[in-house]
Image (cartoon, rainbow, N blue to C red; front, side, top):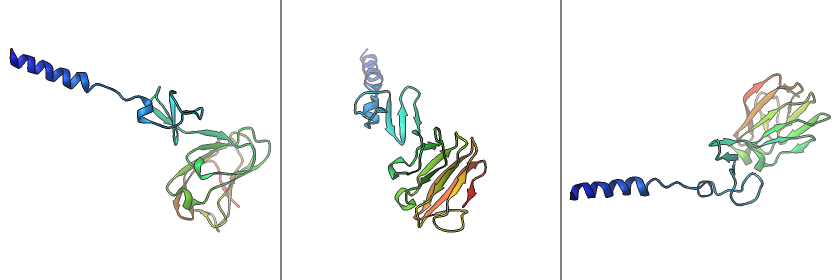
Length: 163
């Protein structure tokens, strides 16, 4: 009888106390998708963690005018949705975001120019500072900072032309 009791207590300890779960706040103590701190079903990482589906989602932003991309925006997906003219997106210094990637998707028939910092190269271009561009819906490119002054094309769809 004593052995049964010890076994029962061991099972309770093993399954009763070990089956606790952490809250999303404990696992992902970041701001939620609204930018405020507190409970929500999504938490910022590089994009955000969706506790409903258990996936990490990237932030998608529509660039409607030319701008310089901040190092804190690396990992995001940039589109030209809503652009009414050609736009230029200037990449941050590759040295500042080494090993990170960024995605660009054309959703408008407006040219999207991707320009590296003046001393950076996009591999496959002739010189530092040369930009690449595309102008058809569906063209996509993923760039990754591989060295202190180099961006590499990880993948691309469509025609990305050097200028």
